[in-house]
Image 1 (spheres, rainbow, N blue to C red):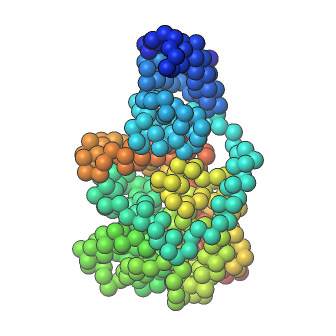
Image 2 (cartoon, helix red, strand yellow):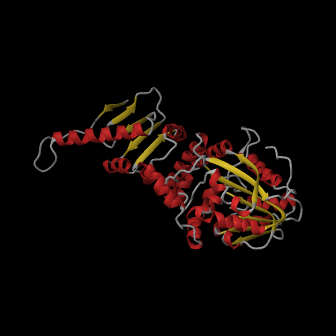
Length: 417
């Protein structure tokens, strides 16, 4: 139930040059009704809506999570016509303001949203999933749109290792730094790395896993990445730690990996491969593994196929797609690769995002001065919505350990977390 609590705008009366009082009242009533219906579709979240003319709509609840300020009639129409895109766009450009607990708001909306998308969404999603949007040139362009942002922006809210993937918390009270180190250690233990083994990493981010594998386990790593910004940081870190003779950071697409290795690892990169590339990705992995080789894929996923949010695709992860576990297995099954272990770190990612969001908000004023309000607003909205998506189960985080079918040299015991 939505209640109008005030209205400050006043009509100037009938005029032959503009809308009459009744026209204005009718339009206002239609706008208010449409907005109330939109809010009901979103699950009647406990919000207070303030329109550009001072009109307030409030949910009949004693607790309000967020005040939504819609700063123009045009912004309202944008929200009504394309809410999936325009909530993000309007917040980004200041057409709306969201004041309050964004994570709880998105959790409320997430719990109320049907888990099965409308038919039209499923049809358009299928077309996008299988569209050839991940060619070499477009892949590099998509990566640059996200990872090419100045490293100072990311360093303001990531841990010092610049690990930009889900942490693994040994306990809920652990610091982000401890949790990221624990994640890197667990991956190395799952892969049972041994000194002087050869490891290839597809999509190495800022280099933290490659550097940890080389520095703590004595392996030799070739790490592929198309983001020059990230590679510059990773190479600087390798030199600082004296690991340039053990880690080679290659500025190239993962599809150009060649040679054979004892371990193949990909953390946070499958989301950028695209469904059309899964079978070829699996073939590349199989050809890259030496006898007795094993691999690990760490990827955001879903319980069932679902369209990527169109605003996330536009502003945060161009070309990104988060697969279901069944879809992930199309990388392995056709290519003679056997699943050895699957683990879901969903709650760990919700906690990771909570740390990132808190740090971003602490640095908000400085980051706005350095990078502009639209970018900071976009990332605040993204991190809050992503945290809610993991906490409500809309998103999962799968770690899949695998080896060649029938190869008995893999470790028998599961690594404890």
